Amino acid sequence: MSHSSLPRALSVAPPAAISRPLLWQETLEHGAHWSGIVRRGTSLRLTALEAGANVAAMLYNYESLLERYNMADTLKAQHTAFLTAGCVCYSDMGRVLCSITADSCGWHDTLCGVSDASMVNGRYGATRFQEQRNDYCRNGRDSMLNELGKYGLGKRDLIANINFFSRVTVEDSGALAFDSAHCRAGDYVDLRFEMHTLLVLSTCQHPLDPDPRYRPRPVQLRAWVSGPAPERDPCRERCGENGRGLRNTEMMFLA
Amino acid sequence: MSATADMSGVGLDPRDALHSHVIAAGEPWLGTVGQGQVLRIVDLEGNQAVDTLFYNAHDTEERYSAADTIRAQGNIYLTTGSPLRSNLGTCMLTITEDTCGRHDTLGGACSAESNTVRYALEKRYMHSCRDNFLLALAHHDRDLSKRDLPNNINFFMNVPVTRDGALRFADGISAAGRYVQMRAHMDVLVLISNCPQLNNPCNAYNPTPIQILIWATG
Image 1 (cartoon, each protein chain N blue to C red):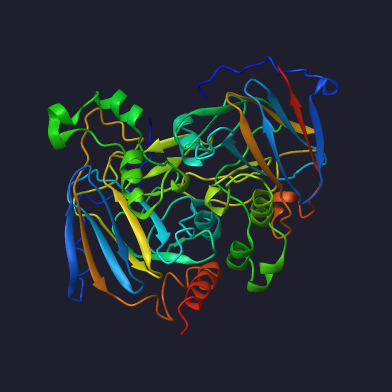
Image 2 (spheres, rainbow over the protein chains, first blue to last red):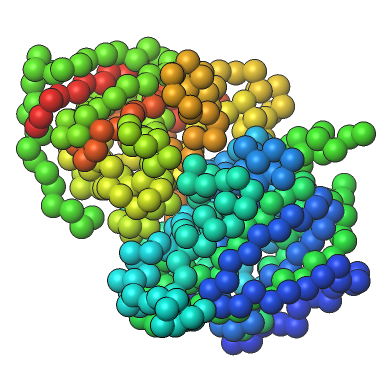
């Protein structure tokens, strides 16, 4: 697959310091799946510990799991086909699950979904716990179903997800082009949560990653108290749409 | 597109259709298309977005998935040869004929809530596709609800994406009488909202009727 590349620095600038005490931190191992509740006013930094990382993410309103991330509403509200700093992640209810407040890599995919068992077995060969123990090859869809099941969710709740750290461009013909050189070691993205969110993650490789090897990369999570979007805020002020989306969100939390 | 064009449905005679129905502007429709049957959607007056979802009629937990469809064909636009895939990766239907040129699956369905975001808070009270979907499912005798509304297809809608990642709702490329036709590979429930949106060019600011035709075989 061909790809056009933006000019990229070879190394990541030192990440903006997190000025507040960390609430917690955790390393997601390569291929791991994870879920947790992230409260409104909490920020989470995802850091790629190796080049070529991918973090598939599905997001749900923890107070009403029927409200969930909506790829289409997110893209059309912001007139974009990708996510970066200044963007917000919309639910299907015109509200904001989280805002992207910092981003060292400039592009996160939300078009391409996750890998599945037949894709992973076909690409990397069938692996089994019986031989490989915990090094067997995970796939994105089953990883998501594993975590969703812990909250009473399942196949009906598989949504078009975000693939943090992955860049897939669209040619004039509509063809997709995966950028293998996009994510560098140390790249990070900060998510500021605007509502109590069930966050489901998988570090499986992007489904269009052409690497013939099964090589998911580890990712670090760090959480701190940031508060929700302030009145003056680059995400809120990016466009009138985001101002209204955050206003809709704030209505839920008025005492 | 990887699939070889299936030309067997070309030239079907509307008089031979099992089912023919005009969906009025702004209205929903829920029906069944059997395995092997051919569904045609006709843009009767031109530039009319047709928001569409498919479910496996025997196991509705399996349903159309925009992400699986896009990724598997390596292209964001739907046209002749495009396999329409489910959340389990299965090809549910294949587009066999398309006199429009291409169709969208990134734009989703309009809703009261997204109207407040996209246009203005007071646009909440305008009729929307999401309301059509919800009402059609509520009146259907199956356990289908808001939980069963993933990102849909917008037949006849034009949402171009540029190399630098810009996305917009553009003027339609469809015209009166153009149609898209697909063959079902399993028994499918078809949920349609004939889009009532008045705030962007997806319906040329004038929603109009569409026609659906179903043939037993191509």
